[in-house]
Image (cartoon, rainbow, N blue to C red; front, side, top):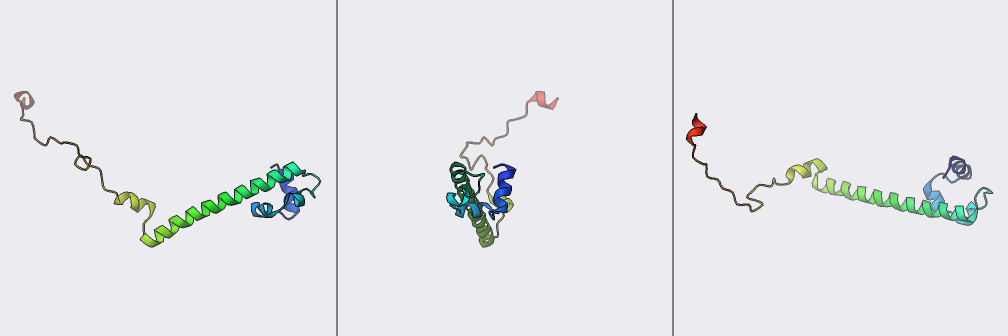
Length: 106
């Protein structure tokens, strides 16, 4: 959307994506600068934007609720993870110390 189209819509009372999402393409074609194709594209894009915003807000509230319930933050979750060790990965470890050779003493 270019600035002049945004100004036309704003002056016409469409101040947000939610306003456009609720509009009909017929309402938008009342502006002489907007034809049916542009009106349809505007309404479709506005609906997608509103849905994206709602999804993002829902995801954000889910994380906030989880944090409030558990008292965890992203940082605290990282610290609570156990460190991986050779034993936890079931890797065979040779814990014998090789005897020192005379060349090591020298």
